[in-house]
Length: 194
Image (cartoon, rainbow, N blue to C red; front, side, top):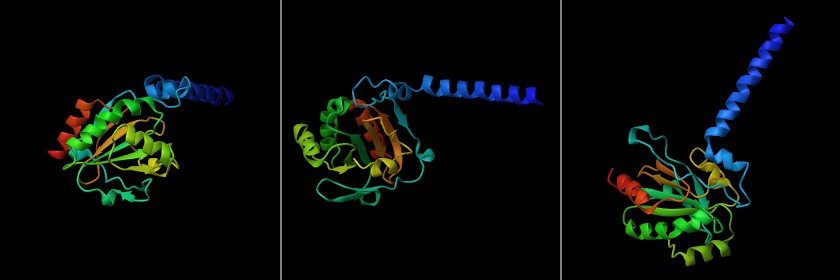
């Protein structure tokens, strides 16, 4: 009896180790988590996930306040939307900021743009927005509440992350890491044309 129990425990330990290895070995975000090299963020790999209309889940329910005290929620968005998770000292966020600013102007009649600042206070966030001519609002999200509401789609440490929501508020696409302007333009055009 004791040999069977010992063998079963050893088998479970080997299987568990294999699962842990598979999880960390194939996931570039998990690999960075243990080795952030002092950069204070885990960069996404730039991967794009598009979700077919028929496979989208329920609308994302969220609510938060901008630095000006305005409440933005899923219910207040009109039509398709882009939600970008960022903070000022994140290098990839700085790379993509000019693209987001330009696209927010290009799509101003069709897509609502909003940010979720996951770290900064009002002064720092507003200075960043002025530097990059970002005119759309950002929710103050340093308390983690808004990030938690998007937890099914946004890994907590993968900043920046950009979501494209369809006109029903469902996630239609996600980009982990700095988003290429042409890629984002294509994703936005796709959701506008649906």
